[in-house]
Image (tube, helix red, strand yellow):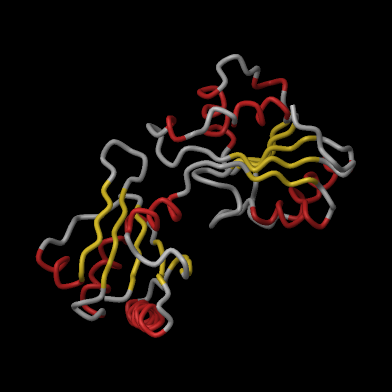
Length: 239
């Protein structure tokens, strides 16, 4: 068991599965961290409980304190800070991937840093990093742009700006979309980008049907995939 070097509480950032079938992507040492915790702040309590029981079958769920993260709700942050003041060991679990990376848990990590708590990030699957690793694009200089605008004209403008930055700054551009709007985003990319611009599409990472391909825009136009309701990461790089 690792002992916190401070008396202001300990926070473990516990990675979770990206896909329900991707439990093998969770390192074995994560269980040791879970066993140290007495309080959990989670994005979804039902799925978090089920996940922890999968990696530690002997866990008695009701022996622990549970709180749901509601983005920036002051009440949750207050409860979190109070737990740290009582020198408790807290686990933060996002709905998928790593806490704090494109995730509402970042707000609590910010509070933990402000409180002088010991924050321990733990290694686990993250779709953004996995997609970048497999894309073959520049991993020395990259930017995560998050969600692009929903409006068609604004989205096309954002895509063109992303492509220009990838070329002028030699900077790989990573972004995502709500799964049911993936096909609209892909259409915008194919209509807006230069034919020689490279686009990586990474779908259903860590699942049996995982799909990661990097092609030029011209090549994607000849073989456009159906991405409707599939979790996907999009990456644009210079030609």
